[in-house]
Amino acid sequence: MTKHIGIVACSAEGAALCYRTICNEGSNLMGSYAHPEVTMHGFSLSQYMRYIEAGEWENVAGLMLSSVAKVAKAGAHFAICPDNTIHQALHLVIEKSPIPWLHIAEEVAAEAKRQNYQRTGVLGTRFLMEGPVYPDVLTELGIDYRIPRAKDREQINQIIFNELVWGRFSPEARMYFHEVIGRFKNQGCDAVILGCTEIPLLLTQESSPLPILDSTRLLARAALKKAVAEASGKNQHCS
Image (cartoon, rainbow, N blue to C red; front, side, top):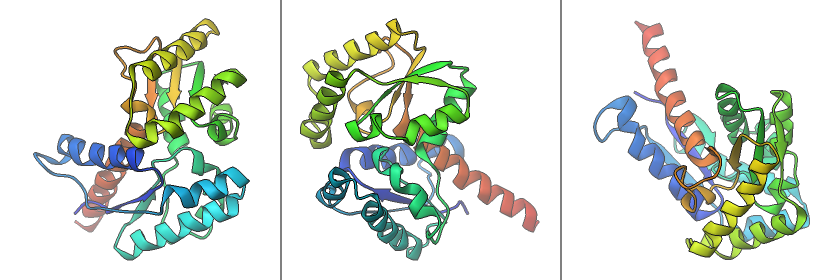
């Protein structure tokens, strides 16, 4: 038996991509059509945005705690959150959570370290790009980073909230993101972090000017590995 994964959802498109990745890639570890048990709970994005825009991270944490309590009650052994922005409140959640968590930025930074990237560009919502989530974990691993200039941060934020979270992925938005990534490349970045879980639905590795670190799929794969590895370890211990 594999471990049961709990997904604390925030925005629909990112959560759906994470869930789909777990289901589709489970076969790589478990055999055809197989994946771990998954339970997902999400509040309305509007509830999160009310607190995010006001900088009320304790209230963001309250929503996350309510969600994780629900997935834990359903049997989840650990939790993930396919939303980078609200990880700013995760430190407030972990101390009260009934089950452990994987941290999306820690998984992305670990992959950057494995790939020996020295300087990464960071894309995401304005709250994410200007917040501590990625700077904290990248700095701890000795990885330099860059964020877009102010006017690009505002435009990226508008595209995310006016288009991507609604499942709209336009050629114009794709071209604009490519231009921003091109500027990262000119600044000496050797990779770009897609630190909004909807951006991987807009951009592909094949078209990107830099190697991408897809936060959504990296988190999903880390959850898969944890679910399978911990179950295997438990079985070996019992035998």
